[in-house]
Amino acid sequence: MPLPYENSTSGERALGEIQKLLRGFGCSKFGSMVDDGAAEIMVQFEFHGQPVSVKASIRGYATAWLKEHPHTNRTRCTRLEHERKAMEIASTAVYSILRDWIRGQVTAIETGILTFEGAFLGQLLLPNNKTVLEHMQASNLLPAPKGE
Image 1 (spheres, rainbow, N blue to C red):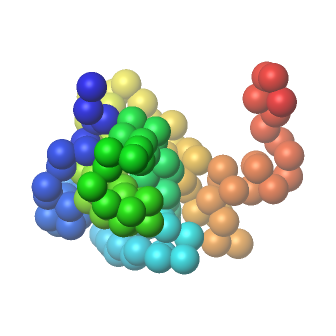
Image 2: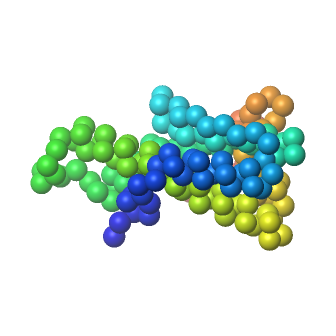
């Protein structure tokens, strides 16, 4: 069974769709960045003066893809080439996932299911340029997952 989004082809085109969606929603600023070292894609925007920073792990998706498609002695490339392929597939897929996730959050806000703050709480930027989620993790404000 294929991993969701593994056959995505839109890649960075999805970024343009995110920007169009956020502008239509009323966001006044928009930016994106790829952090090759951290293997993350970041989308930042501002809504009514509230900055938001959404990060998505390329490496996380690549790990999931490799679990679904492990390298074997029948694979027609080296392990390193297989891992590179996973990162290429992941970098395309993550853009599409972000687009669909942001579209879902905006739809939930527009239909009254969630408030803006409820939809993007973990991604809201604080004055120290950390997200609410990063602050909570650094301050040990979240309970440890069960089993750890």
